[in-house]
Amino acid sequence: METQQHFRPTKAIIDLQAIQQNVRNLKELLQPNVQVIAVVKANAYGHGDVAVAKAALEAGATMLAVATPDEALHIRAHFEEPDILVLGASPVSFAPYAAQQRIILTTFAREWLQQVSTLITNIVNPLRLHIKVDSGMGRIGVRTEEQLLDLYHTIQLTDNVELDGIFTHFATADEEDTQYFDSQVQCFEKLISVLPEKPRLVHASNTATSLVKDAHLQFDAVRYGISMYGLSPSSYVEEILPFPLNPAFSLESELVHVKHLKVGESVGYGATFVAPIDMWIGTIPVGYADGVIRKLAGQEVIIGGQRTPIVGRICMDQCMVALPKAYAIGEKVTLIGRQGQEVISMNEWAAKLETINYEVPCIITARVPRIYI
Ligand SMILES: *Cc1c(COP(=O)(O)O)cnc(C)c1O
Image 1 (tube, rainbow, N blue to C red):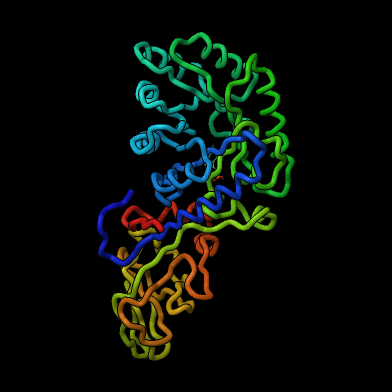
Image 2 (cartoon, helix red, strand yellow; image 1 turned 90 degrees about the vertical axis):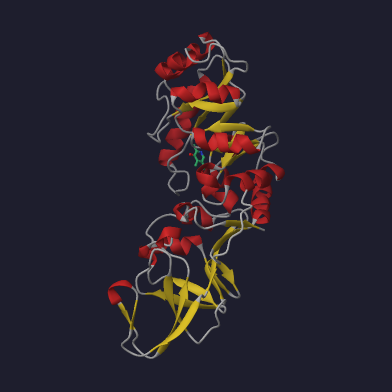
């Protein structure tokens, strides 16, 4: 977790209590004995992996999931106990490290396993594996009964590996139309039914599945990502949420300069903004190198409880805003989050950026310190 001092006033404020409340509310939806896997990949969707993992574990998660080997090692360096699953493909060379660090890997190809087996002849703990089923996402995973049984039997015949789980991922769980979703469910259920013995953890649900689909799809565990952070996976799910989600991420800065512009004077690279009347302009120390990318030009921020737009082009480290009056240096600026009666949501940024809310906290770069409250 961050311990360094920060002197620039631009910071991401992460509300860990909001994350814990979200996890507790999500847990209420689960059948008894269904485990919560907290998905903390990509630095916990930009919120900070170690702090979020700690908060999620305290609120009832029993396992952590990441996308890459490096992310798993980073988590393991801070948490000795909990199971950590790497959801994506891992290189063969990582297998001995995974076994040693008790990191669970995802497998979906016999060739990978055969290569791994040659590297783990001398390990102490067995390497634990979850088989990935591609039931329709078209990303990674076994697709047929034949491939599944072949992989299953190869695992049984390989020394020092242990089958711990099997899982799949849905492509359309956040949409109203259930046809494709239902076909994926059918495919996954058919494939797990052919296994001679079911492993410890069968899992399939992401946020959207667990919030809006049938409870039997919880199987033994659910993988919560976006909802933990207080965001909805889609506008469809947002409309039918069983409880409100609490967003955990705010982006804040301060005015570092305030000046008066005469009509006709301009602001920023390209001199693209020209004052239409005499007006006040403020400068905030945040720019595209922080993830406030140039496409956000024109996006509103909140100052003094009022919305006001970014004017001109966004620079690498700074940008300018129109001010309704001459605010003092040090006046707080909220780029994402609540100030007074106003709120700027991740969804608002996502719409402006023509993307999904998932992408917004991920693009706020490491230069912006994450401060935990
Ligand atoms: C990212 C991811 C999740 C989490 O999905 P959310 O929609 O954020 O809940 C779950 N499972 C897999 C395989 C993932 O890659």
